Length: 251
Image (tube, rainbow, N blue to C red; front, side, top):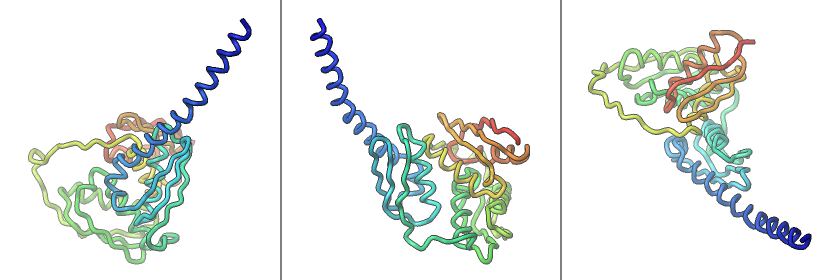
């Protein structure tokens, strides 16, 4: 009887040892595939040469990206995928990364933030920066969206002033296509995190972001009710967000 029990245990352990590598390999393949098929990688990072390697849920990103902001976006997207335990960033920027609040870094942050927000992402906005002063040119689909572009830009860390030279082309809302694009949860979380980090009013907040089927939940600590409200407003205008549950507390 004891021999039979021991034999059963040995067989069970052996099968488990055989199955575990197979499961890990399947999970790692799924992580790599999900990252490549994510909205962020297919939309914002499609021009970058990013290589993704996953081993037992530990992901290493290598290759080159065009801008510093793309590194953060790639890391945050992968970190939000199911099964990922940690992410190592070994990517390089094609050009020398800007330091401090240089004009090139400010431009990078402004362009990224305006792209992430629904209200400004569909407008062809050109961004130039000189000594911290940002100039916006292009066409906005409404006066309200033109004003939002100014507000979003003014709150980017390092921006001293904004000159909005955009023109407004008022469109009949009834004629505008209401096609909604699918944005996966990991991409939504990455966009929200990056946007909150780049905005001056929310960059210092200890905000945690999670997304479930397009519903974003914010937790963490805000200094006051105004900062808490602003974090939700910024998050709510990110591509793919259905609505925001704000569970942040005020210290």
